Image (cartoon, rainbow, N blue to C red):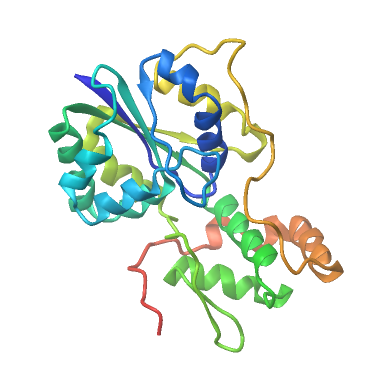
Length: 265
């Protein structure tokens, strides 16, 4: 039985860099009997299987089967989307992933990268700061409190901001839910921002491929959306946040018990 390698994120743990790495090395991976599927979507030049995530979410088995119809059955499969981590609080959906992969004739192996709650929440705020017009320095505490509690954020004027990620802030529960179902076929690593290139080595070990001189690496940058509305005020915020990070985002201050994501009011 061939392996089905499933990378499930988490968000903000170098997923885009990994997916770019897969894209750059897809021929190399194929030579090592590992097949990838490139989706034509807004994730350009990456192996990001968002469409497949949606099919699993909707439990469309026949479409999932067709999705892999062109894959060489003698090869292993590599799938990556951090959106799969959105299933982390629904054991039934996690079980559906496992049973579907087995039904397709593969042995499932799942890998998850996590980040400390402190570092994760700080990174989320920086992302919002660089992509929104109205987040200001005095809303950072409100952001911390409400995202940790409700998974969404309101500014002072009560204007709703939808955030694309499910904010997976309870690493212990995530690991426990996936581990309970996949047992020894679920592994996890801690992501360290200052050791970002280590994720490539970790992943090559996971898929049992030896690194060589022909492997290509993506540029070391955050391959994210372009920063909009940039100005001196925002630059000041970033300097301030870097200085105040340890005081603002203290792990022992955060109530990170996950509640169900509330719907937009």
